[in-house]
Length: 515
Ligand code: AMP
Image 1 (cartoon, helix red, strand yellow):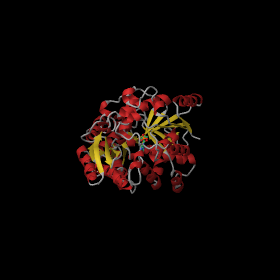
Image 2 (cartoon, rainbow, N blue to C red):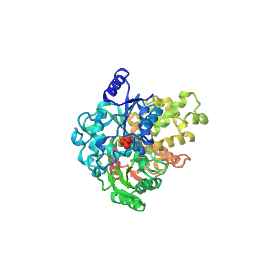
Image 3 (spheres, protein in one colour):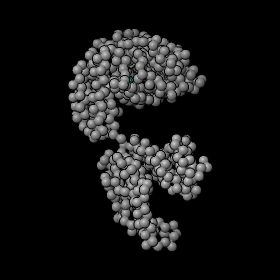
Image 4 (cartoon, rainbow, N blue to C red):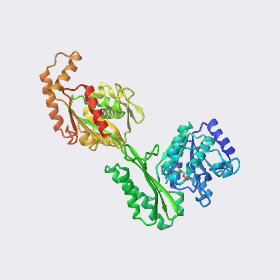
């Protein structure tokens, strides 16, 4: 049964018992009530991550100017309680204004101590049109965080400016809480859910749905390479100028963290809008984010790909997508499970739901950290037994297919570098930077010969090595699965007269040009 508390003292004693006696993790979802699916998504996330869930419902007078809709704002406590009960919320805190503002008539900012966010964040976007609004938000959120001291607090990306300001507030005032941002929940029409949607007529709802459509127009242009703020903003304005009943208050493109205006998107931009539909003011936004680049390094055997890739990854803070480690991990799993190495069908079934995790090591000379289904196998996959079987496993079409899909899924977020024979042609054909790293056969033979000499092998014939390398190149270029091929848009880097450091420097230069 959900517990309804209306006073701070009751709430505090409840929280203290739960935290200190039962060591419970507390999640707080602050709201103004009239709960909809947007709020419920925050609550569900809080339930998934905490032991005790508190939803606060408080229509905060400090957030409303005298001309705004404080009196009309929807209040539906009974319905909200039922929804919270159904989801499994432990406690709803619904104080009245007097309880939250203990001294005097503190429903106006002038009569209470307030928390003032940086002006360059609170007086832009909505702040320009709602003076004092973010001071009201910051003050009430600080009070709730002080009263409850939750482990995590949940906010919607719908109110992106609020979210950025609260992140900053928590950092600046050293409040020990983790902020969890949740994505915008929308109706099928695209209209972002809001308690204020209740004010809209059926016709107005249709008009309001165009707000998101206009943001999507800009997102499409951005995806096609448009980075200029004026152009993106114009697209939204033009699109909405065709819609009857919608009056734009502002459309702006700002940095999502510090909310400062952008001329051009470098990494990401928050495209935010406020508009009136009839007499209802609505807000919406979309984050336009360039993914971190993918770097694909392909080339023939012996060109130094793996050393170079590892070191570039370390220098640029990219994840080295160690495809070799992935094939090793599968090989280890097959051997552990007792399945025969050539039983392709059983192997395909075994890896169907495999969960593989690669993490960058702490130092460049350490191997990639690998987990299979939560078990760390970093060293286990590098035994001579695994080495002996890995090429037989990697040659199986089902294994390759599965691992390429996994690699591509990791690639969606960007920020990775991978090396191989077909990374730029097959695995990541849309990689931002493709390098074809190569050296003449003679040079690769000489390097290999030198390595072997260093290992004390004096019996190797340089001519023979060159012959072998040539043959290997031909095999690699002509094999059916993942043949070696330079992508049309790859930069060929011939390393004959370059040191490893020079090669790395060149690749980093290329990367900086595209980033
Ligand atoms: P409110 O009751 O409007 O103050 O909102 C309470 C919390 O719910 C805030 O963190 C909002 O950002 C979040 N929220 C409101 N609408 C949505 C939505 N459509 N999707 C996700 N979160 C939302």
